[in-house]
Image 1 (tube, rainbow, N blue to C red):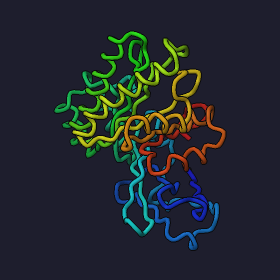
Image 2: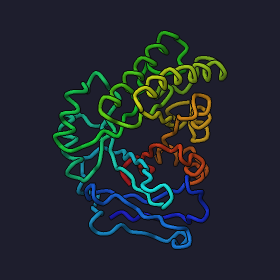
Image 3: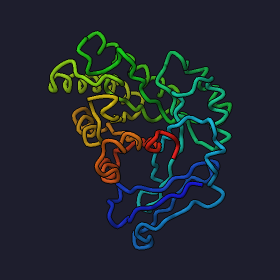
Length: 289
């Protein structure tokens, strides 16, 4: 059974509150009432009511990453809720099989793999609607030859076109967030100087964001650990790149990568604040927590 902990709300600005979530249950049970700070004891352990809890064993075989999105329900009441979602990029199975399982496990949405050619919008939408499953968004799949920092300009152009297609897929599925890892995953040496690669990444992200703005899709930059990329490993670096692109760009943090790179994971979450659009939950061994 999962147990969640609420932080001392007195220490956190209203827009930066870290709130508890729930796995399982159905859409009627997604609210966590934070309330005024003087009604919440610092660091008090909190366990969701029985009707919103379920053992992870009930979701055996589900994808390993959990995507959490925070939603503010009342502008001044301090009440929040989150959507729970899972990514399907590790699953060698049909989307129908994955979505059916996630529905049975009580998830709200799927964070669909960044493969637009594999998921035609009309067909994918029909599958999601059949199971009452929403699309939270997508995550880029930055395989060899994809990367905004690659020295080959034609590969960079191809990457921009690919990411724009991912954004269009998210928009076509009424999704909200496109999470982007800017560089090639598995490439740990640069092709050019720091300044050159930074400029390429900013230029590419700006062009992707133009499409995202038109479709009302938010972009979140995800840092990953140094053993998978040399470019953007920590939350502060992701925020710096987001600042260089546009004020509406946010970040996605992943607990697995944070475990390796962040000195203080909670401080990284607080620093992201309201720009934390997506959060991937995984244990230090990359299994569900």
